[in-house]
Amino acid sequence: MRYEDLMKKDGFCDLHVHTNRSDAMSIWTPEKVILRAKAMGITHLALSDHNVTNPDYLEQSEHHGIDVISSAEFSANETIDGVLCEIHVIAYRINPNDPIIMDLVNRVHQNRDEYLKAMLHGLELEGIKITLEELKAHNPDSFHIGRVAIGEILIERGYAKTMREVYDRYLGKESGSPAYVPSNRFLKYPPLKEVVFTIVAAGGIPILAHVPYYGLDEIRQYKLLKRFRYCAKHRGGMETEYGDYPPHVVMRQKELAKLFWFVESTGSDFHGYEGLDLKQGSEELYRQIQNHWENFHL
Image (cartoon, rainbow, N blue to C red):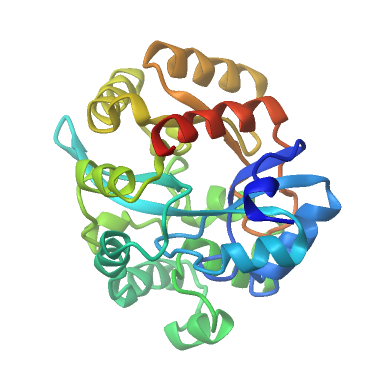
C-alpha cells in the first residue's frame, strides 16, 4: 500500500514512542516496536527517539503496512524565572533528511560521559557501583544513554522492581532522589525558540511534550506555554493524553491546550520497561493532528 494511503487509514495511534535508538531497553528495536503496535491495532505510530531521526520510516511503513511517522523528541533549554529547564519537543512528520534537521541532531548530540558519571557517583554514595563502561556495554545500540538505561541495570540487580521505583528512590527530580543530576548542568541544548523554528522549517508540527513532568508550578507552566505559543504560532501542539496521566491531569492538559489554541496529541512515551505499554490513542485525536499538519504542509 502506498504511504499516502497508509496515512489515511482509520485506527489507533501512538504519537510518542521510543526504540533502542535512544534510551529504550535494548530488545526494543524499531521493528519489534512496529510489530507490537501492529498487533495492538495501532495504524499510526511515531517513532520519536531522543534527538535522533528515523530515516527508514517509508521503508518500514510499506514493509509492515502501518503508518510509521517520521518524528523525533528534541531537547531544548529554556530559562523560566531564572531557572534553566530542559524542555522536550516532539517533531511530528519532519523530513528526516532536511539539512537543518541534521544540523540540529548534530548540535544536541553531545558527549554525555560527565553527566552519566555524576549520576553514577551519586549511586556509588548510596552503595551501588555501576561503571560507565558497564552502562555503555549494556546499551550498545543507543544514541542517548540516560536515566532509563541506568534504571534498567538497577532493576536487573534487584535495587528496584519497576522504573517508577527507580525514579522514586534514586533518579527522580520530583522525589529529590540522591543520584538525580540536572542534565543541563552538563548538557547545553539549543534554546526552545531555535528548536521549534527548526521543526517548523523542516515541515513538521512542534508538539510540547509532558508539561506536568518539568516540575514547574502553575505560573511557570503558563509562562512556558505562552513562550511555546509565541515560537510555534498557530502550528503548535501539546500532549494531553500522555502515558499514564490520571483523568484529572488529562482534563487539565486539555483545558490548557484549548486556552493556548494548541492541537492535542497523544502518546505512551513507551521505553520498553515493565508496566507501560504502547497507547491506543483515539482515531479522532490522530485525525485532528493530521489535519493540522496537512493544513500547513499541503
